[in-house]
Length: 384
Image (cartoon, rainbow, N blue to C red):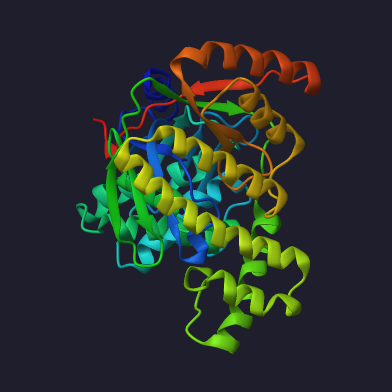
């Protein structure tokens, strides 16, 4: 990522230079909406993310410049403020500050500017990259790195919960902090045990197609979480020891089906299906069977579309186009309601797929989708 513009703007705004940090966005190969259900996910950090330049200013004031924000790109707040800023983007940084202070970190004021090449609203977790970049930077500057990586990921998650209105799981922040070049991470979202899996699909590329439909989670996300919690409560009352859908099986779910709405039942069943798919993909990766990985990706997409209902016509069209082109695997990535599809594409059909996706999508929706080829990269780090 070229940080020249960021460095120049920082000097123009603040009259000095600071330290530079970076946190990546992420892809998730499979395991969607399983994180807050205590299940497994399979993310990896990518070579796109958020860069932050930051400098102590010797006061209690935080001054922020968001290079990619057209409206209200400059915000100030005090570390002593109790009310979060009006600008939504600044709430992520305000929340990180408050969560670090809750954990005993004594912060001082700072000036910061940030920019990114991870697309906003594309399902690549730009918000987690932003949280992780500031958490990592502030931990390094004010606590000598004493807050461990697990806690940094939890700080980002708590920021979403407490300051941004999204009850997200831990996956996005975990992947941003713990990413490793050339590896995906199987994360147990309950125990936070994790294992790196080499991801080197010779002859394949990872291609993201941005539908240009900006997803907004908020209430839709929380509503699906509530559906899962209803099913868990009923199964726990009948069988005991069901703390999350991770603990359930199909027989348990069918036993309480009569007490669930059809919508809640289908959402819960999708999560059980996805739990099985993640484990199948682990075996497939160890065997180097990327064709099986691709089939499971398609199964995930149609489960998200038809049962969990977090897709949209634009995303379904892109996945159907991928199928028509012989793409190995394709699905919506992230929370849904827009954003990107992630595609595992044989190099021999990659150009054909990209060309057809752009042409046919523009013809149907009058929008030209953006295409990103991504490489699995490292997690949060100081650049210089």
